[in-house]
Length: 107
Image (tube, rainbow, N blue to C red; front, side, top):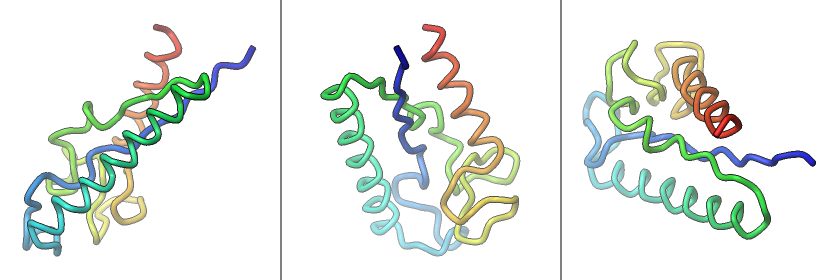
């Protein structure tokens, strides 16, 4: 009777990037986020196809990407300013993910 949740990926970098703040060109930033979005779409489809529940954290993380200032961003940049791997959620991003998971379980 377990409920299986598949948690997606957050918004990593805004469309067009924020060069030179993050050292990735605008077109490359858009391409990178597009790949992450495609991965989220596939994860959502696979969750639905196999009786799992997909948890979308991308939408809630918009405006909290690696281009934002520390304290606002939920995803670290290429050079992290808080304990996290580059281009991965920091503590604030993981708190957002936990909030979305709990909301999904309760809803």
